[in-house]
Image (cartoon, rainbow, N blue to C red; front, side):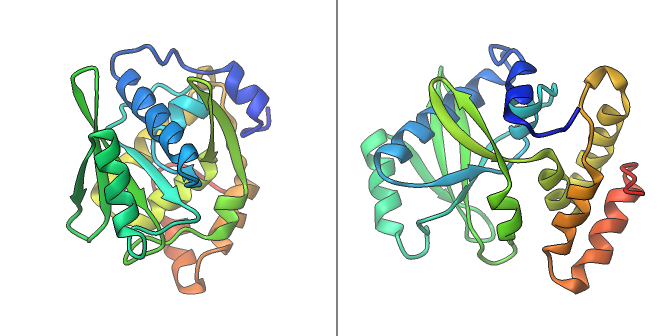
Length: 212
């Protein structure tokens, strides 16, 4: 099976009515609908990709979207206006990133608005090579599993290391039914600066995801 084909991904869609996933899916749908109406293009880049695009049972804690045609830095008033219109709270991360807090069914869901600022770097290779999922009637582009693995490896944090180890265990189980495209992983790694490639590769393989 070739990972990432949207037809295959959608046929394996996890039951998003599960309590642990449902609020995040609903929040993504809400934000996607609002952003589409306001002309904001984005790609889903966080762990929500796993249940939505690959049917992998995963504990999701927030929703990460990467902005393509607007910036929270230069369009600050725009994003604040969007928040006011929809009764969303706006916050700043410790690194200066912007996030929304969206209330869904009495639960607060955090939506991180990411872009190539500070410690965040998303190569165009990952953004151009996406899958598309339907979320409550909204089409949302998402990075592939291979891209998520590379991004987590680049983070080089304890949390990212645990993420990769858990994902390696999931992918090693044949019942998961997801095959990693190792060539695509290597190609994604090559899209990062040369001095980062060795570290990214090492962290991926140490986690148990082997590229040879």
